[in-house]
Image 1 (cartoon, chains in turn brown, red, blue, purple):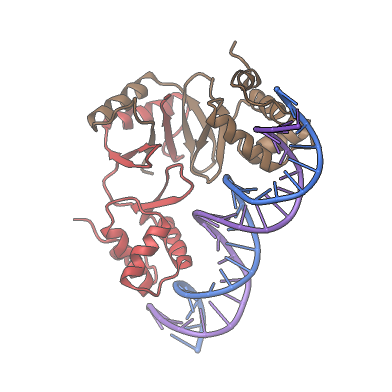
Image 2 (spheres, rainbow over the protein chains, first blue to last red; image 1 turned 180 degrees about the horizontal axis):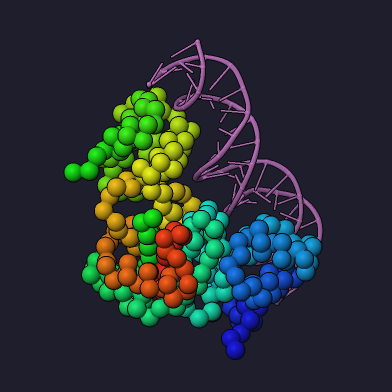
Length: 135
Length: 135
DNA sequence: GTAATTGCAAAATGTTTGCAGATTC
DNA sequence: GAATCTGCAAACATTTTGCAATTAC
């Protein structure tokens, strides 16, 4: 099993505070893609002394340290998930907002193929793919 | 050649105002994916009597009427493009924000395949695909 | 003439930040 | 003890909205 977010937080030399411990725990236990408001609510259930500002600062720090990955699914809020999870992509139901995870080796190959065709170096750039279907 | 956005605006029975005419023109002439601020700037160059609020209201109306498509590429601003353009998907360079359009039949098939595998009905739901690459 | 549209300014949302006090190392 | 972190409230960015005046049909 992979290390917890807190383990990796310590390993990165980040200062461990009660708030960070709690936020890390919340994200370790989250199987979904919580936004900041949700993370704050879940953290507050454990320790009521956590402000939203701290959640914002912490997820940003964790993201910059590579512990979390930030996602934006088009609803104007950032969502976070453990960066050490197995790689996967997302399908969003635009009407309901439902987030569906999936893994597909073909899409990985395809993304690489398209980037190459467009003359893009995948090592130098981080690319995100946005696919839309006509209704 | 396809009808202009203004043509389709009229065809939908929407009231044609000077502002809507200008905003439609701006979007007809835009080959990129302008956000509201940019649309407003371009519209203001033609007619300085257009407020940002009107741009917001107009693009929302046009989107709800199917004249425009709204896109969110993860930078917190909505972008718009002509809905009647040939179908395509987007690749975003996360570092630079560059938007790269592409068409790939395989990705369409793949999206359908994945949706079906997950038990999703593509006719009933509008799905968007978010693909990320590990750095 | 009536209903819809506009501009303005205020409000609503999501996020960031300055600062004084508290905490980690 | 020095540097970092926190909470609070204010600031910020994007988008929405109430209202009175204007405009389309």
